[in-house]
Structure formats: structure tokens, C-alpha cells
Length: 616
Ligand code: ADP
Ligand code: MG
Image (tube, rainbow, N blue to C red; front, side, top):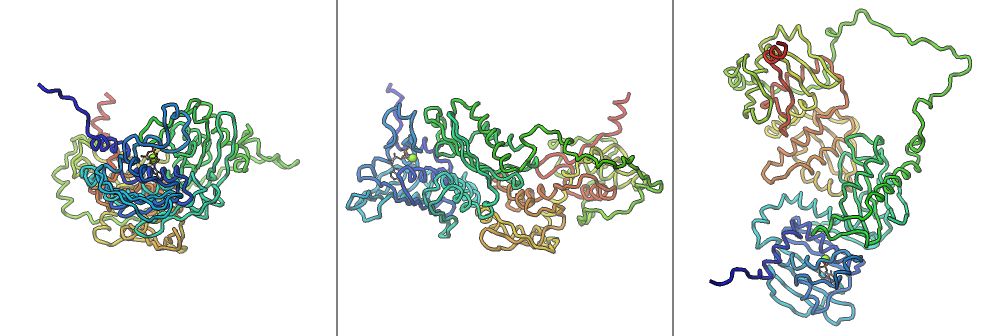
């Protein structure tokens, strides 16, 4: 019998490596940009078509490649950057695995054109799926241009796994930003479908940040500077009052490379603690420089994870330098002092009289009579006959209801029964009033038990279903703004908003383009209670970006989910009785009242039967 083990052909090995290095167009973008930086370019152009699915091209004016190197660079483990394993310890350049080009060329059609400064002619190479097609001399400017066409053309399975163009483009722009933010001395241009998305000249760091993020950042950033033997820290943090509802603007760089490090991220978040609202994220652009010998960047194929030798000290230094920067800019005067807030109370004037506080009581006050205008005027969808027919036969006052998602059928069987209860007992409704616990939960009864409802979750469901129906019948209900508001978005968020402007319109947003990366919000959906439109909009975009895009869920459903989640948040915690009851009615008018669009419970039901058992 012959032997079974043989070496994999290079093309196969490269494809396997590609699985690690190139997951999506953005990964190829990262590798190509890093190579251009390593080549000493002073201007780098990135050209994208169809979110990188049909074309990614990087043009640099760097050192270029010789005729031989142009062939060699596509070989596996071909690198000019390290020679011995020892070099690994002190490497300063970005890429050093010698894997990227070989991997990319194994899963795409690649054309490289390059010329060194001293060469008469340049060279052009075409490689498709690891297969060498041709090499010829050409006339080309100094530097290198690499076009990656039809990524994954020979790996349909991977191609099918790619997300929508919107999302893939977002990943690409993110990689672009990560490289552009750490190389301010290099000029960058990013073209998407022949339109310039970003164009930034060589500059200093602050100018680079402002150029990429928008002029508004001029006022928003505080510098961070700290030199020590272990680590040098530089960069900028956003003033706490500009903390964002979106996690987007958090960047960590170490020795010129973007990295992720949850531990150090925590050092920063912690320094911002109590200065920004719980649901907001601090903005930061932090650049660490450490002795390359004290880190290991090679622990991850995409090189975004880094091991630090002395991470505990770095944590402490980072934390304190952020606190210092915040303190220095006098943002929180009491921050660095251990003063009790009560000690700031000014002393009484000398012969001032100290008065007993007076409590006034209104003996006529009857909380149940007070007429208030409910804050939530969500038009009730007609409770059609069809719906009634669904729940009537299900009505069974003795049947206990569990609100675990898995026990519920699509029709929300369980809750139809509570709804029936609620509807039937008009007299009960008159006598019994819902009340609120902890300024949050609404507690109410039905004939067969007690319902405890989370108003925010309930609103999520109510708004979600209303949005879906206004998408369907194209009848959004909007509130026009007396003072239309402009919102400055990041270029990516702006692009995303423009792409979805129709759907936003159907949801009730009146949005117009209003200058560079700026939108004008003229109307918002009727059930919006959030006063801060910018906050609301940012959180909607964040929801859309972080939501799962399995490529199957309809865009409208994803948008409805994200909108509902953001719009459901309301600052007001105490609700009037009418508001509570209005909400319960609206919730039970929903198709699936007991779950949020994400499948979390909106309410809990405890049957009297269960209660009785407990008191036995
Ligand atoms: P690595 O960057 O880890 O060395 P790559 O596969 O990314 O591996 O690149 C292989 C080699 O090709 C690099 O070491 C470099 O010598 C050369 N190279 C790649 N891109 C460029 C470029 N834009 N300009 C000049 N040389 C390049
Ligand atoms: Mg490389």
C-alpha cells in the first residue's frame, strides 16, 4: 500500500492561510494599506468598487518592487521585513508574516504594477487564484499599484458569506481610518464608486483627526500626553459632554498599529466613569509607544491583538494620565480633590434666619381623578375581528402563562389570554388602577393574575409593530419640528443614512442632505419622546451597525428593530395612570405583545393560582 501523507500544494496552503488573513474585503484593504505604509509612501490612494467585492485597489508612491521581487512577493513566507526569528522581537514595520499577498492572490484576480525610483521601466504581473498568468515590462509611475479583483471568485462559499455592501463598505472604511489615523504624515484618498469619501493631506495628528472626523472635533478633543520609562502615551480624548451613543470612536494604537485590548480599554472607560451617562461611550484616540521587545504582536493572524509584558503598569499609567487630562482641562473641578459635595454649600449670611421647611398638602388631591394628557399618543391599530377570533377560543382563565419565549407560539397565545382578561373586565379596570414600582415597572391586575410590565420594553414592541405597519402601508406618522435640527455625522454614518433615507422616511423621519456629512432633520416619528434628536439618531445608527446582519433579515425589519429600541428610551420615569393604561392597551393590541422584537420579555405574569399556592 502506498503512503497516505503528502504535502499540500502551495495554492491550497495559501487558500487555507487566506481563510485566516482575509475574511472579507476589509481584511485585504488592511494588508494592502499596511504594505504601502511600509513601503515608505507619502501618498496612498484606496479605490473601492462594490464594497470591495469587485475591486480593491491601492496605489502608493513608495519604494516599489524589482522585477524579481514583484514575482517573489506572492510566494508564501516571502517578506523583505524579517530574516531571522530574532528579528521578530524588534520589528517596527507593520506586516511581517509574508503571508498577505500570497493569501490574497490565492482567492482573487490580482494585478500588480510597480516601479522603483532608479529603474527605467516598471513591471506588471497578473496572478489569478495563485496561478501565475503573465509578467511584462510597462511604463508606470514610481511606486506600486495593486488591484484585487473579484475577491473569493474561486471560493463561492466565502463570497456567499459576505454581508451587504453597506456593511462591507463600513468595515473597509473602518480599516482605512485605522491606518489613516496613525499615519498623519501620509496623505490618503479613499474613493468609493468613483466618489471621494475621504481626502486628507499630510498633517499633524490633531489636524488628521479633525480632517477625518469633521470640524466639530476641533472643540471636542482634549490632548493626552504622558512619558514614562514603560510607555509613552499620546493622543486625544473627547470631552465627556460629547460622549457618543455609538461606540464608534474608540481607537487604540500601539507602535503605529491599531490594536484591540479590552483591558486597556477598561482603563479609559473607568477614567471616564461618572462623567458620562451610562449608555454613552467615551471618544478616544490613544497612541502608545513601547519598546517593541516588550510586546508580542504576532499572536493573531490579523495582528490586532497584542500582548504587553507589563500590562498592569500600563493600565495604571494610562488611567491616571486620562484622569489628569480631564482634570487639567478643568472639566470636573472636584475630580482631583477628595472634597465632599456637601462642603461646597456656601455658608449662611450672618444673621440669616433658619426656616423650617414647609410641607403643603392638598387635601382635595385625588390621584385617580386627575386628567392628564397622556404623553404617548400612539394611534391604536384597529383591533380587527380577526384578532378577536384568534384569542377568543384561547381564553381560559385557569391556564397559567409562562413568558419564556420558547413556550410562546407565534400568535402570542399566552398573552391573548391576559388580553382577554383585561378586556372583559371593564368594571375591574374602573376600580383598579395600575401603579408603578421603582419608577419603572407597571403593575396591574387581570381577572386571573398580576401583570408586571417594563414600560421601555413595552414601548419597544409597540413602536416596532407600528413602524412595520407604516412601512407596509407607507403611511408614516410624523411630528414636524418647529426648529429643524442639523446633525453632523461621520462620513460613514452619513453614507449609511443617505442609503437608507427612503426607509427612514417611511418610518416618519423627514431627513435631508444638508452640506458635507450633515443632515437636516425636519420631522421625527410621531411616537418619539426623546428630545435630543442627535442622541436619538446616533443610537439608531449604532443599533443598525451592531445589529446582526445575517443577510436574510429584511432591511426594513432591522431598521424597525433599531428604531424601536432607540425610540423606546424615554427620560421620563414616572408615568401618569392614563399613560400606563394607554400603554397596556397598546401593548395588548400588538401581534406579539409579550416579547420585544429581540425576543426579551416585555412583561411577567403571575397567576393568582400560583400566588395562592405560595401562600398556603
Ligand atoms: P509582509 O508585509 O508580511 O512582508 P506581504 O505578503 O504583505 O508580507 O508582502 C510581501 C513583501 O512584498 C513585503 O515584505 C514587501 O517587500 C513587498 N511589498 C508588498 N507590498 C508592497 C508595496 N506596496 N510596495 C513595496 N513593496 C511591497
Ligand atoms: Mg504585509
